[in-house]
Length: 365
Length: 151
Figure (cartoon, rainbow over the protein chains, first blue to last red):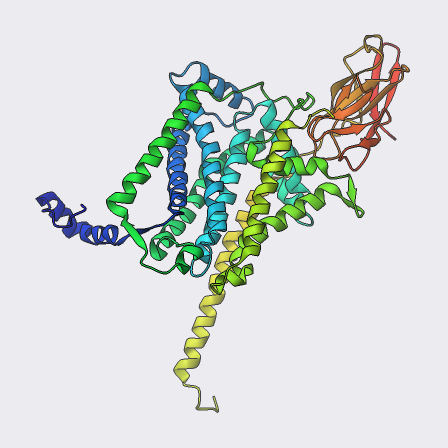
């Protein structure tokens, strides 16, 4: 397709007259990718998209054996892992791709933040991206419970209780999320519905918007590259960048296959509401920095329960991240904005430090 | 109408638009109300058990140990202190609802989720828990342990 003068066959012509392939071809040829020293970060969004597609496919496969009830969920996953041929592989890929997707999504988000790609006219692209991050974390939180094992059960108790501690709306939201006052089989059924229907529908719609906006505005060129004089280099998306993208996807697939084969997903013990919480209980790694921060908060801060202070602080932090395009006025005006670069670095440093502490600090002291 | 500034057609159109908008809102409400009620789970009658007889004999509970038992639909913890007293508390941590356990090495009730400590009176003494554990009354009647909510 690079030359642009290929002869198309009769099938192509037949389809073009009915579907309009020429318009698509024109669109694909028009798309160009800026080439500069930060081009590598352009691959992370596509990699996240690839891992999302892996999640959709393996998720559909898991649906064929999974049973969403407190009595059967654990056993159905046990059956899947032990009896179904390659069941362990499908589940391990689903579990690992989830982690990798959140990881590439975080890297993508922070590269966009530090390269200031959220500046006008790409504010809505940023909002849809931050919302997609929220959905991805929702996927992780709801999916974690589905095997109905001990760790997942207590992680969900804590997680839904945190929702319940949100001022004013909390108790209502907690009940709505749990499908009752406690984490029970009703919660499992609810999380299942959220995980396999509500979130996928919302994510598909938002992803459509996100990708449409990326096509509409093209790739953002970082301000410091933009300020440099001289002609900017570009490469065609089809096939030059697309082929490079595919190499990235293959790389992700190779990492995924290796992780799934050498470190298959574990199942643990079936959840029992009448056993104490296991020692060393941990949430998924991407919630770890919040989990660890809550551990360090005292019972009361200025007369308010410590956890409520923590939850409100994280809520405000999320809101701040969402509104960065409006708060960073200097970048919007085209001026250098070192403050927001430092804020971005501080957020990354905070998350790394508390995640590290979460995995190294003793659980029993 | 006395005024001729407003075309009769205009006012009719305005009325129709207003009416259509109102029916639109009414239609939305009639869909949103049942939907929102549907999403909120119905209240299930709480277990009203005020008293539970444990399937454990007092002699089998050693000093400086603790164990979880069912109090209605919720977990509770029975502790025999090193001094030999039997005590019972709700086993639900007041911090974020995890189930607590007895730590023989610390002679304390402890929550593994966020490292919360309670003393043998159920009082929150260390870590994030904001309140003491709910205490229950333990009575030994012959060979039975009977736990009840405080009167």
